[in-house]
Image (cartoon, rainbow, N blue to C red; front, side, top):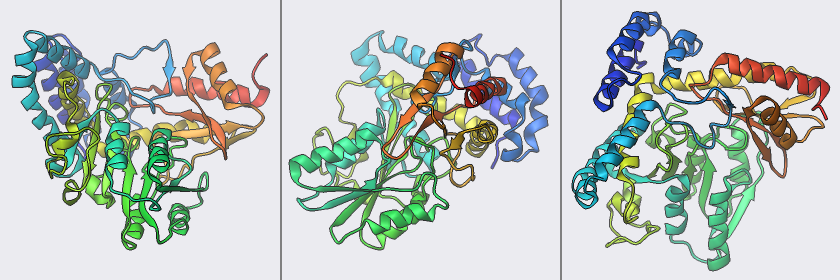
Length: 434
């Protein structure tokens, strides 16, 4: 159910007040927000996506510089002031007497963060492990599955390099076989992705790995359809959700997958170096952990957290990021991110020599988009955007396509995107000045 604007700032404001007096969410500011809250309470998430008064207030929760137009939030996103303050507060407390304050006081509080993450993910807390990023989360799965020489792992040629290198290491050391299939960019429909994977299956296929949102283009994949297809053949599915968690509105169990990993420092705006591993409860026992706990065959999800000394302040500050996300509302946030992508992509796609590598159909993309300009290398476009105009984007190079990835976030202002659009228009018409 959409969260009202009034409820959002009552919830987030209360949290901030408990953290640090004089931050953004003080009583004076709250009164200004409450005066405007009724203006959005009646709107659907898609209608609220274009309410700039509401999003202006959300933007004030961030401390991002306006000296750079950051359109590369896909790699890592900034945290709100609330999260930064919580991290500092927990860190200062830890340093009072670390052996006591960390292990005896802050350590047990991680269980509340696990519970909050489980509520956000729509699953049991006993299926959630708190890790540092998607690479660590899926590393536990990739290296933890029992596979024998000749067993096949199937994925696409657009999956993230860290995951592919992990599989390739197992291939070299253990003799498993890693197969990839090519998928259209963009596909005419989502079933083309499922069909491509289905054609790659053999009687030796044991695992399918798929990205929920492909990091190269922002392509959303039909994970549920892929999982159902795979399970009918007795094949397990791993989902790389680095870009979909806290970006799209969904519950993990609804995807139908067996294993799931994501980073929380992307779209959730949690502290840098935070992630989540989800393992279906009945599969935890058989999965070997990446680092060895006392009982590696335990069915306790915490066996995947056997890291040794870790930063409890970073992990505990995740809670404030969840509060902020919940205050906005998952669906409302999804619609805003899609609105921002469409805002620039619909205009840029009309410019000479521009090609969108991302479908604008709402089922196929949300906040990430990728475009190319005929005859100009993406790297040169990105360099010019930043060096001349301080617009930060990401060059994407793939064996089948090249483009510029653009990823705004909820703190991004429309006038910043307008400026980006104007510069791209000039590049498409006149090229890059020598």
